[in-house]
Length: 110
Image (tube, rainbow, N blue to C red; front, top):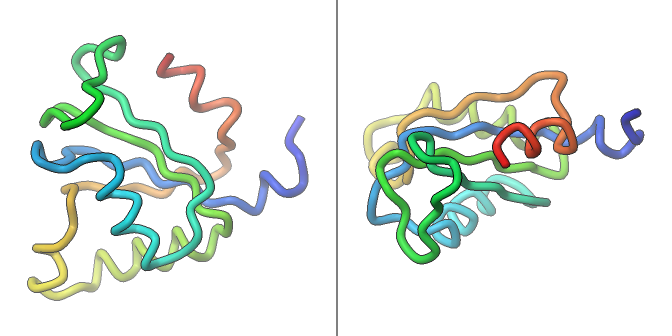
């Protein structure tokens, strides 16, 4: 059963993270757009292996914003952005996970 506060959170799924980017850099980049509650990164080819310092090109992750509107606002900005903004983004694809909560998603990748 979902808690009331969990239903107000917005979860983004990101893919194709650049190889020279660390999870800390991704969190710092996304903090410009809203408060981040939790993050989870995993290797898409080998889910059991996750390098601690640098990420591989096969990396994906989930970022939970404290408000749905912040996650949706970031995606709107991403879709309508100009080229100079796209150069700053440390990943190539992002999706909003509608009707998802953290407690059901993370066990799928562990």
